[in-house]
Length: 148
Image (cartoon, rainbow, N blue to C red; front, side, top):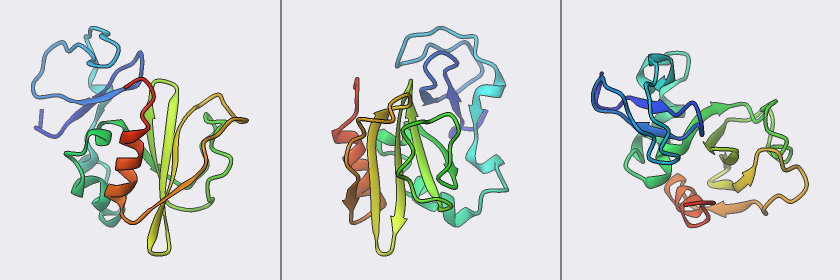
């Protein structure tokens, strides 16, 4: 297993780095493995995602919010009722922890941030915030993390 492999907890969907082949305990919900290889997220193994789209994620791989990175999409997620104000179709970064999601997308020379919100909440969404860089957008998410 490579040093930058991530595994997703099947219980809370928290993503964390794994260093070897063994049973793991999720640092978020303390669910004990075994986790299957299908839970591993290796961004290098996804050739369909252009490298320039992944560049902001790779440049910030040591940021504490990086572990919640879930996917890159077009702004439309069927499983998230809170994602109604996202630009679509548009390149959007999704972050997820348990049933909470947050989104980041580029808007001209700045970044827009939809802070953490319940995936089931379509009414009480936090206001969209503006950041000067992708790292600053991650900082907004770090400052407003729910349950942690």
